[in-house]
Amino acid sequence: MKGVMKNDIRLFEKIRKRSNNNINNNELVLGIILLAFGLIILLNQVAFISILPIIIGMWLIIKSVMKFQLAINLKSMMAEKWGWVLASAILMFIFGVLIVLKPFATVITLTRFVGIMLLIAEICDLIESIYILAKVK
Image (cartoon, rainbow, N blue to C red; front, side, top):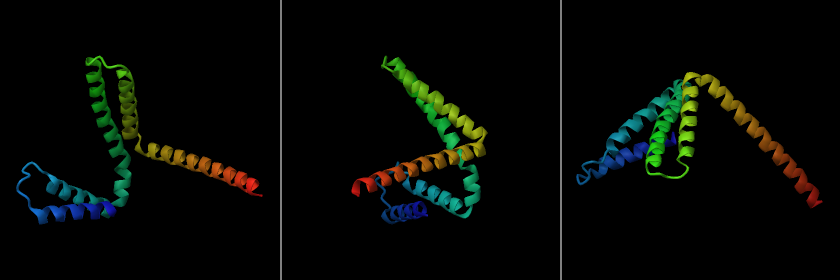
């Protein structure tokens, strides 16, 4: 909701200013597109949640291709440790493909991971509280 309102404000400011000195500025178009996406997400939350893992997977795949290109560029410049960039690009690509191929299994795994991390954090908080209470007495 906050993102939709932010894009509304950007859109209305751009219409209000109507500056002609920025010919190559695409903020109005971007504002309209983001407003439309915000409304679609707001009106179809269940559909958006079901395709969110696929969107994230595709984003990871695209990002990994860009990282792969960066690794090639770093290698051609004889940069040190370009292999780490290549390795991260390969891992990112693999994770992106896995997310796209098994989006619901990804959501279940991610939910379990978050649950385990929350459990560990709360156990640490409990131990910390017991320790502080013991020191205060």
